[in-house]
Picture 1: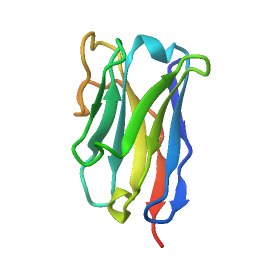
Picture 2 (picture 1 turned 90 degrees about the vertical axis):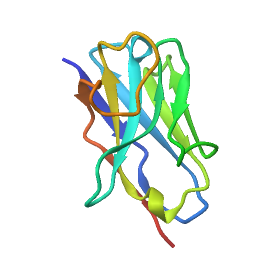
Picture 3 (picture 1 turned 180 degrees about the vertical axis):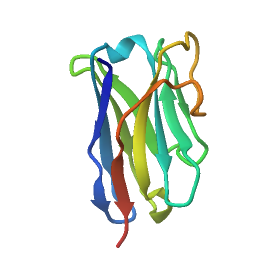
Picture 4 (picture 1 turned 135 degrees about the vertical axis):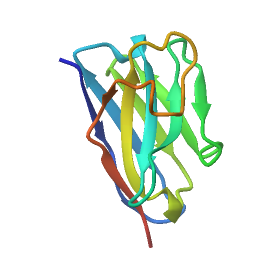
Length: 125
C-alpha cells in the first residue's frame, strides 16, 4: 500500500527556517517524481517544488532562493528545507508522488497520484 506522510511543520517566526520531510511506505521515493505543494485557507493548492526521477529540481518563483528540495535515499524521504520564511508561506504543506511521469516534474497537481495528509506551517510573530 502506497502511503506518504509529511512531518516537520510547526510555528516559526518570520525569517526562520523549517525542514519538512516526506516519508514513504510501500515504494522507494527515489524511483518517482515527488512534489511539494501547499494550500492556504480559501486559496487553491499551489506547487512549491518538485524533484524528477533523475534528481532535477524545480521551484515556484515564490520559493526560488529560499527553498531546497532533496532526497535522502537512506531514509526514503524527500525533504523540503525552507529558509527566510514569510507570513505568506503559512499553509498546509503536502507531498505527492507522480507514478507515471518519466521525465522532468510538474508544479501542477494533476500528474500526481498519491498525496500525504499534510503538515501545517505557520509563520507568525
